[in-house]
Image 1 (tube, rainbow, N blue to C red):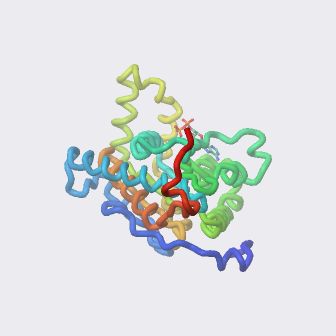
Image 2: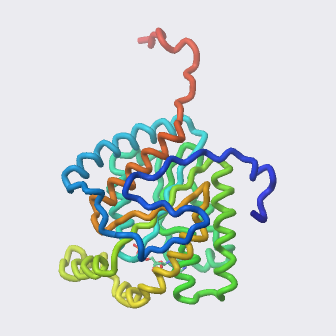
Image 3: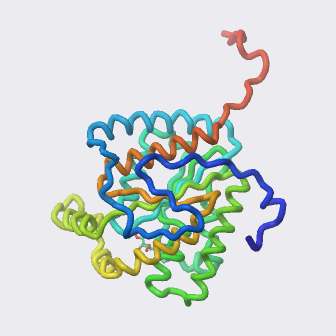
Length: 286
Ligand code: ADP
């Protein structure tokens, strides 16, 4: 791992729990083939069961987030990537419902500004990584720089090819500095994308969500799937593996993402700081 000091390499890396049942974790060193992963999987649950289970997971996240915030020593970065209409916004809204906004920040990354393009490609992401005690959520992320940038040929191949290793180093740096990195790819089928685009066109209330450019991007479906396969293969590491979430069924997607976040926070085991001595029994003067 070029570029990182021995001190960082020796840094503490927390053990990550396995992702919730239904999620496919890409084993480091093994190829990811999205075409072999069923986006329709629902774990044999029905919608009502999944919704009830989701409330339990949300309550776990809320309690654990309070501890993470109180402890103020470590942080969690949750990365969401997906094809257009894949459900990043909906998942974030659902899973973080009820979380104390003070301890959580969501960042969406759009086409880079001129200032951002004047810096190294990780600059704008690094600035937004969560500080101690915080949960940070990336709605799109540094992976765009090996996805859209590759599919649309925005930089020469040798430039985007070098980025996989740089991304691994970046995530290793974050992890060694106390940030647990959790990465979800929301996996939908091409038919499901068609239905979601059609429903945006049919419903005037959803027109604001419809971008005609999505129809153009859809023509590059296969190129995007290949770019995702490569990114998930090259950047699934023991310290920050990629999790593929079957996402055609929104209620199943929300449940298993929430459960994985809750399990990860639980494994981090955040602790409230020890109270100052002698608080119990104090009286508050009138
Ligand atoms: P979203 O689809 O996430 O809701 P938008 O419709 O505004 O938000 O799309 C954001 C756009 O920004 C996407 O087309 C995405 O490909 C593009 N984008 C994000 N990061 C980069 C990047 N690093 N380089 C080029 N384009 C990017």
